[in-house]
Amino acid sequence: MTDVVLNPGAAHSEPEPSLDAKLRFLRSPASHPGLKATLECIETHMSWVFFVGERVLKLKKPVRFPFLDFSSLQSREFYCREELRLNSRLAPGVYLGLIALQASAGGLALVPEQHLPAPGKTVDWLVSMRRLPAQHELQRRIAEARVDGHDVDALVSVLAAFYRLAPRAGVTALEYLASFQREQAANREVLLRPQFDLRDAAAALDRFDAALQLHAMQLGERATSGHVVDGHGDLRPEHVWLLEPPVVIDCLEFNVALRRVDPFDEIAFLALECEMAGAPWIGPRLIAGCAAALDDQPSSALLQLYTAQLALRRARLAMAHLLDEVPRAPQRWPPLAQRYIDRALAALDALHRGVAVNAATSRGIP
Image 1 (cartoon, rainbow, N blue to C red):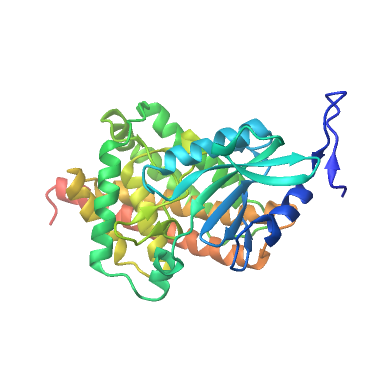
Image 2 (image 1 turned 90 degrees about the vertical axis):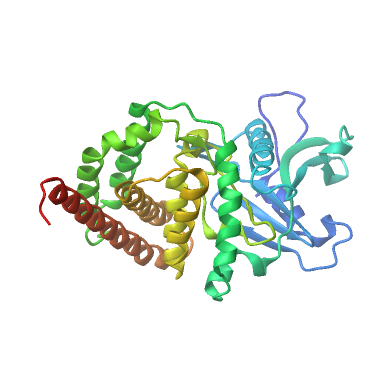
């Protein structure tokens, strides 16, 4: 691939660097003056992340999916700014600002936004972050059995304060229920593909459909009573850092609909992911602490419904990696998806038992 591509829409346009040229520049230690440590680069589904000494730089991929559009320079700049704005809520002081990647006759250069305007032409934008100490990531702390009740209680304080102040999403009961139905349609489209041959996937999906219909009124009441907020959208252990106080990074800046959540949907997600990582005790303490702090007691049925839906979504997202043109670590995803399907079935079993007990109690059966 050549280092420059011409813009055919403008007769006198300056050549722009190709994506390969941008990545070569950003991966070069010489592009980061003063760097004394090893430069590391990690590729995610939507970004390239560069670890540059005490900083982290994130470059969004120029991609378009049904749930996001980073295909233009303007959209990438907009979502970089949204990433800064939204993550300041749960990670104050971690997101430092924007950096322009500029091209000129002398080549590429990184220019902090506060130093603009500059002679070059901005050809991309990066988010600059403070590098967090890896040993305090919740995922790692779970793996090393270094999480205790105090850590969870400190996280409860941060999350409860966040949800108390989070803007209400203003969704109707029908809109909230429709979001679950859309997720379920997406789950079916991926998980039931014949080439995947996932055990019990159809049964889990059918049982969730029935549970969703049975508990539709309860879901709708969460929306009409103002419990759906503009939340984080991706509350996982790898986004939680047990500092003093804890911080949570990497919210879903690119899709407001995916951030419209019941706080206990997000908390159930974190509980699920902690359980899958090997710490099932965290979820109950997290849920009980947030319920007390928010003066909100979601029913066991609602929490099991959320857990089942989240597990099916995670199974779908795992298998969706195999639909990429060049899947990364293809052997990893089917066993992981199967674990989530099994967990969804366990949640649906618990939901069914709870419904049966409630029905028997209402009829006076001991």
